Image (cartoon, rainbow, N blue to C red; front, side, top):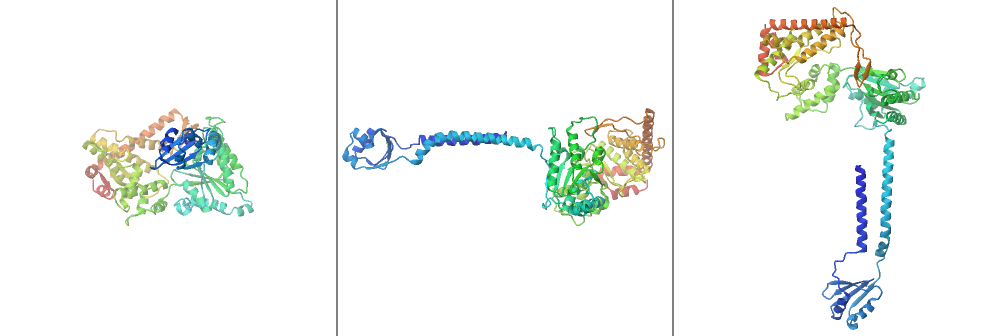
Length: 607
C-alpha cells in the first residue's frame, strides 16, 4: 500500500508537469502591455515607435522611450496591408525598423506533438506501473517458499568464529574436530568408503554456547554457514515450510561443502502422532521434508546439518535414528576452569582494574552458563560506567553476580522498622542454620536489601562444582530452607508471608527426594514421576499417575515427615545458638549487608 501511494504521487506530479508545459505553450505568459491596432497606428503616426517585430500574428513594438508593447493583427492579411487599412502614414512607417520573423520550429512542433503525445505517455505510464505492480505481487507470492536462512560467508572476518573464541566445552570441541576434518578433506573419507555424517545434534542447557560452537565449526572448516531457527520454516500457508526446506537444502548443495544450522529444532521436530494437528499439520509436513532431504544426500555431497535443542526428549525418533543425526554432542554447564576461561574471553575488550581476580569470580559462579557469564561481565561494565569510573573493579563483578542471580536492587522498596527486624531475623535464621550444618553450602553474603522479588537474601554458594548430591546434603538444605520460617516462629511467636517461597522450594525438594531420587526410607528405590501421554505447546495435556491412591497418601506422608524433621532441626539450632542469631540480626539492621568474612567471625563466637 505504501509503495502504491508513492507511485501514485509520482504519476500525479508527471501529469501536472505535462499539463503546465502544454498550457505554457498554448497560452504563453505575456507580461508586456497589449494595445489595439488603432492605438499602434496612432503611435506610429505620432513618431513614438522605434522598432516593430512581426512574428505570425503577433506584433511587438518598441517605443523610443524603451518600453515595449504588443498587439495582434488579422490572420488573413499581411502586416503592411493591415496598417494601410488603418490609414498609417507611409513616411512615418518608413522611419521605423521593421523585422518579420517566421514561426519557431520548436514551438510549432511542441504545440503539435504535446497535445497528442501527452495523453499517450500518461496512458503508457499507467500501463507500465500496473504491469510492474502485478509482477511484484507475483514475485512476492513465489517468495513464500524461499528460505529465510542467514548466510555467514567464510570470508566474513567480522562474523567468523573460531574454536579459540569458544572457551570451555573441551569434549564437545573434540567431537566436532572430526566434522571440521570431514568438511576440509572429504576426499580421504570417500576414498576409503566412509560416509560423512549427515547430522550433528547439539544438546545442552540454554546459554551453554550451542549456536556459537556451530559457528565455530563453520569458521574452522572455512565453509558457508546457513543459520535459521526452526520456527522460521512454518507459516500459516500450507506447504510453505516444506518448500523452504527444499530451497534451503538446494542452496546448501550449491555451496557445498557447507553447514546448515537449525536452532531450536524442537519447534518443528517434535514427536509426531500425538493426536494434535492430524496428518496435514504444517509442522509435521515440514519435519517430513527435513527427513526426506537428509535421506536424499548423495554420498559425495559435503553438506552437514547441525541442530541445537535444550529439549531432546520431545524430538521425533525418526530424527534421531542413524543416518540422520548421527552424532549427538552434549554441552554441559562449564566447570570452574571453563568459567575462568569464559570470563577472560568476555573481559578481553574491557578495562579491568589491576586487582580483578577472575578466578574468584569463577569460584562464586557455579551453575552459570556461558551466556550468564557474558551478561555478568557486561553488567559489571555498566555498573562502573554509572559510577563514572574508567575501569571495572572486583566489587563490580561481585555485585553483578547478585544482579544476575536475584535481579537489581530495589532501593525504593523501603521497609518499616518492624518489617526490617522481621526480615533481619528471617535471613539470619537461614544463614545460621546453613553455617551450623556440615553438608550445607557455605554462606557468602547475607542482606536485607531487596533484590528482584525478594525482600532479602542469603547467598550460599558451593565450595566446588558438584555433579552428584547425597541424601545428607538434601536434608541439610531442607533445614536451611526452613531456617527463616523457624526464626520468625521462635522470635516473634507468629508468622508472616515472608517464608512463602522458602516453603514452596522446600516442599518441591522433599517431594523430589521421595518420588524422583528414591531417598525415602518407607517407599524405597522407586520412581513415582508422572508419565505424560500427550504434549501440546510444551504442556502436558494429560499425565495419569502410575501409582495407586494408597501410594499417593504414603508419598504425602513422607513429604510431610521430611519437612517436619527439617523444621525441628532448624528450631534446635536456633534455640541452641540464639545469642549468635541476635548478633547477626542486629548487625543486619545496622548495616543491611554482611559479607562472608564478617559473617564467619560472628558465627565463630561462642553461643
